[in-house]
Length: 493
Image 1 (cartoon, rainbow, N blue to C red):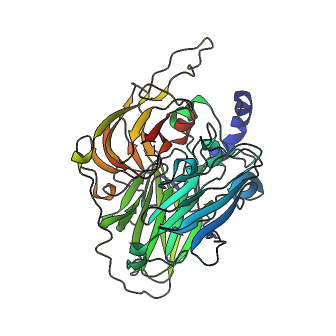
Image 2 (image 1 turned 90 degrees about the horizontal axis):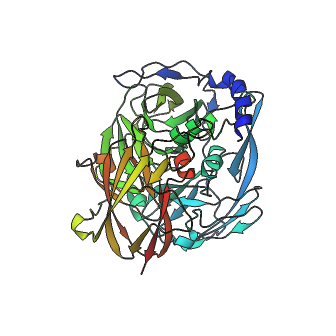
């Protein structure tokens, strides 16, 4: 958006921006606020539908998807222009099986280029859906590959150069679930939409006319576009009704840049059973979990002891900012007592001695000079190893079949300290250490996105196998990515 237009609309936006979300409360030093301002919460939580497999035999996964414009009433009497996949906002859940052939026809009906990136998927480079695989307006894209990884909660979203943040903000995102024999046989909830619930959590801000207030001023580029309303599965203040007993929540931080700490108003314990790339070895008890933009976690929550018509609030704290009552959970029915699963999946730990290459990456928020008009210069402010993204430059070459350790440091200039994250396309990695210490138990599984706080150094290890070609690595705070905090690695023979 042009700066002049933004300045005109910013004053008009105050009516909504100042209102905040119903359910907003401040967070004290002790943790989540115990009370939140009452909101409406009269709408049922929508469950993204499963995308229909056009191969009725189920032997392969054959899908069709339109990228399209839409309209949503997030507020009464206000219509917001949105984007969606096969609908007005967000997209259906794609569910496949390991070993299945996956084919999809992606039809771009938008008036601008887009892409469709399979976030977390181990996939041939030509079908990765990054900025090197654009889908021009009015054209189709036809990925065709075999699913080649274990059960996991992944997601999909656009990844066009300089447009990722804007297109995700307007609604382009959806879940991508992989199942396999292990997930089939685990004694965990798996009735999709009943006791196996996807939760796409996003924050948004709006102009007074109801349109998304997505702008490109300097503050938003540096800090990310942080919203003051929380959407869950594309809805403000919903209520989810679940049966008594164990419920599985698949959490996705689908925001552009916000980092969330997620828990419940009664500080109840839950068990984390999966991270980005699939199941942990065993459940990890926690009462809140931090997820940066793009990270996922699966948690088991025991609602068997609730009284009839009990209401539990899911709280979302924006890091260092505010806590929102994002949604309510209504518990009904009779309890089906089930024991907590004790073992999930054996995880092969990649030994450090297997790594043949060590690489260092410095993610830096650089101090800015002054331009002739007194504005901060638009030059190299967000960089990886001092460089901004160049689609014509390969930054790293990786030998296929090799194992590598990447050491990633968030080095921000004074007064510009801010979090970053690192997302690698194609591969899942394991976190070796944070500032020399072992990662927390819930971070010891397979990951594709990792949060790196100011001054922190994170070491990860990964195997690069099966596919050659060019992939991306970048900060998954989308405004940072769009500003060029991204590089390319090529897997070569």
